[in-house]
Length: 138
Image 1 (cartoon, helix red, strand yellow):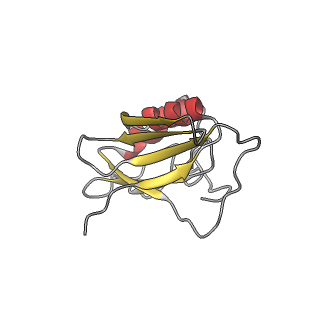
Image 2 (image 1 turned 90 degrees about the vertical axis):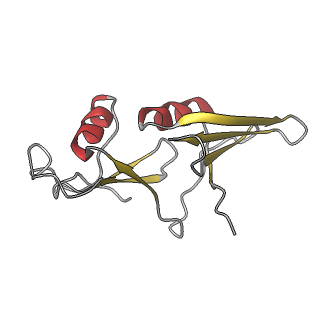
């Protein structure tokens, strides 16, 4: 058995691609299906890694609701503080800041929870992250 990908439905394909580019994923494949009125965009951090499949249904009129049965996507990062600063500078809300130097959560424009885990040992606690409160859900 081989793990292939994770699929998430997106309401605004350009916004979703911009977000996943921001966290370090690149488009590695695309399939347009005019007869089915949908586009699949595959995004991955490295060639050969299982991608995230962004499914864009052309006729979707309203954003998708978020089911609580789906948890999150998780990515290991070289520096969790730098990732959170980059996202915050781009206007992304940090829902669970990396107060412990190890883990943080944000949400994509389609409310998909994304977890960032520090590669290796936790970084020493630092501001402003230590003083930031959790908010929202992830």
